[in-house]
Image (cartoon, rainbow, N blue to C red; front, side, top):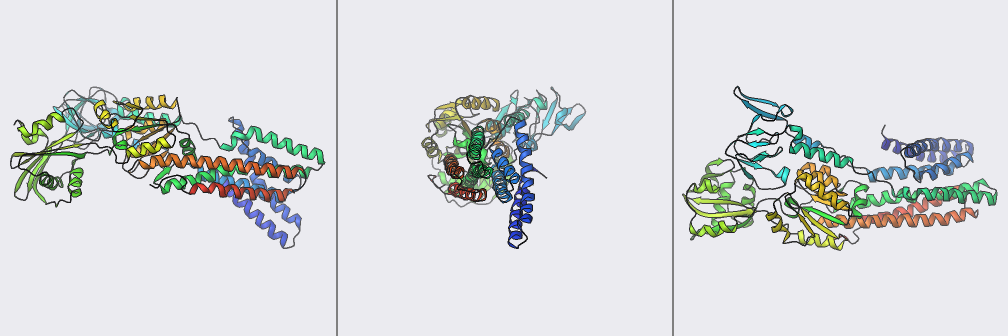
Length: 617
């Protein structure tokens, strides 16, 4: 039986004991039988709480739970078993709510390890053999087939290769590599099969390092300490002093017990968990998954926001930027023909092209005789027209660019874009330019974060400086860090975190270490890599940035209500303690009064379910 199940069992035992004892007493069996039942129902809670306090004390923690232990134990010793079982229900109920509110989603490395390369194809004079990736040695010549992950870091031996590096660098567009270029493990062969030479062992390669960094950063996180424990060193001695004073003045130990019962810090035990449940539920309605009260409390105190570029501040895909049409050609007609052809393609751009055509309400035709050249483009027929679309080398071969196309080629020469050349019946008819575009709600999201108290906003990207500058020019940022590999992203996050509580927002596997290293990691989980969601504390379930600002506001409001509930609950308990000192409250009445205070605290804490100042997503 795990600890959470044990706590639920203790609550059930206490409630059943109270009900059974009341039933026996009302049935006329006498108070002795009822007292025995209430005592038996209270003892398991007392024993479990004593063990928990000793265990926490052994590791250097000390909480207000000790007051509940003292009050229950004193009630049993003084023959006030009804008061004892009511306190037991208050305490056990609080711990069950706390478990539920702070239940943390399991963060394991399953998504990362499942994607890790497992086999490699080693070539030699004897042929090609498939081996475990752990058996690859530096210097081995490896064959990487179409659609396979690169097993280790290495050097490209063939003339060229087309790679999808998005899982490692975050760059959404395929990269063309030439002979002698360095290759990273974990990237995907997006073209034809090629040969490479291993330059590192599997455990020393890029992807394995990402897995290790996520594990290390997660292990380094501090555990969440209940808000109540911060007051423990003051509350326990203060309560014992007041209780002892009441006993000394009155000479009545029952009066001292009444003080202990009303001082039982259930507002402290209950307020934060109930408020956090409401805050987490409110966040879920806004399309935000928070992994428990730990993430929520930390997010409420964040003052610096770091954003990945690709897939976070930008759409993360190849969007149509411009169509250059040859003289006499219509841009929409070219797009209609290209999209019709691309319906038969599995290339990363195919969906973007078809989506762009349908966005313009263009009717697409069925292509025929389609032949795809992996990593280069495709050829086929649409209607009675022959079409070639893809790289300049595929479409034009060695032919020079016509005059109308030269200005565009110069304009995009150094930009991180993908150019698709389209020829109709052997003549260049148009050039389509695709690139990563800023999210529509990016500016508003950053503005809302500023108004929520975020003082510093940083963009952190693995892309080059040109791509980073193009996006940063459109936003109000305090700093930009470009050309950052996963290890450098972690270092940048650690540097910011040393100055102020910091959240990191990202979407790719390459962001996972930085997400885990931040005070709070927020993953754009609608279509990102699963590993980033595993490493994050908060997951945005919709493909928009606006919920990030909502998450901060929800967290701030929830924490404020939790503190308000604690302060109000303690104030009411202090008034009740004063009444108990004066002998105006019996232990049972004190326990029931404390239950009333608990209800008031819970009702206030449940306000976190409301919208407050949070804008609708």
